[in-house]
Image (cartoon, rainbow, N blue to C red; front, side, top):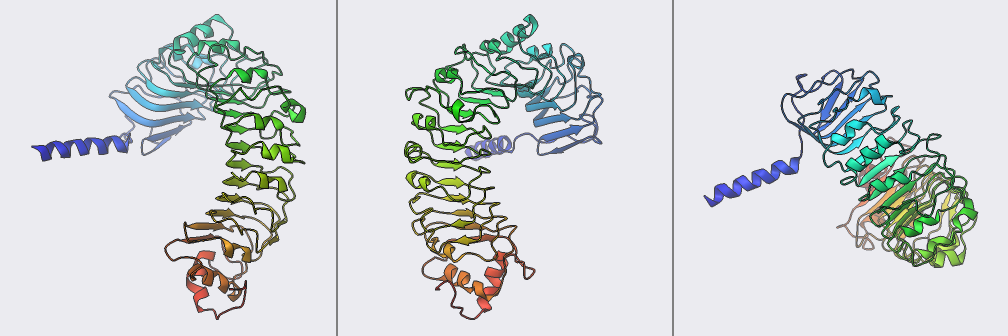
Length: 469
């Protein structure tokens, strides 16, 4: 009896672990010629109708896209249980959603983005316990009218994720978001507003954890951010008017004490902002797409807890020397810049570094001593550079404690017996056979991957006095 109970429990757990599965493709649930389903994820395009279900169906994701002729009739999704339903990129107006279109639907996240909605459809009110709603990139000019306010009140008790925004429709920050008192994630994708009042987040300032405000006319970091007591992630991307001056705001160090991740990509910044040093628990910084001309020593020393730094496409022509003062760094991404060389001292103090990404740089030289103190590195990416050989400096990287991946894809690497040092390094006592060296990329001189050349060809090469091996 105990054995039977045990088998039954295991079978139930395995069923739950597998998640939703695809229903039979016999057109009784969805039109098979316009939909495809893989492991409970159903994608449909160019629909003009969706038949009501005759029996319960459970899916992970249902995506309906590019369907401008579709009308969502009452109870269309009755008996459907789905984690995420997306009806997007179809140009649908509010008139295409009947009042009870979502009646009987059980869903966590509803995506109605990239349509032509003028307001949140009334049909949304009839979804019980909706957790997430995305109405970004529609024609909504705001959420002020009584009808939308009533809709927001009815879904506000359960909603924790909300996305909105389009330009030029949103010309001021919507204060009616206060009707979402449990909001944890807020995503403003675009707007024409330039100011935000100090009370912009009233009603949910203690619940908000993740905030994204991008593609706006903000000309400074809003002081209202200082009231987000438990914010952990902040994204301010593509706000071109902020610049260096807009980053210089009086947010004191006692504010935003939980902030751990910040992204200020493409904000017209040329200097490393001093304000970042005021967030004492910050661990991740992204400043991609800025024309960064200067990283001061004081700025670098003020962010001692940073573990991840991304400065892609930032106009950098060499690895900033002041990075040496951020010894906590574990991951650095300097891809898409103008770096030609990696010198001996460029990485010397980054003793905790695990990942280094230098893709899409015109690199021609890496010092043999560049990784002298880099005992923890497990990934080096140097895709699409000007290298024609694997730099000898790689041999300092250790295989003793972990696997190592070297990514040289999209380079013109010449494969010949001069690379014999690579084989000797991998198999010498300095490394260890118990950890794997994975080299990605292809040879330009013969038809072989770098990994195949290392494993099967270099062993037959004569001992070659290269790289002092």
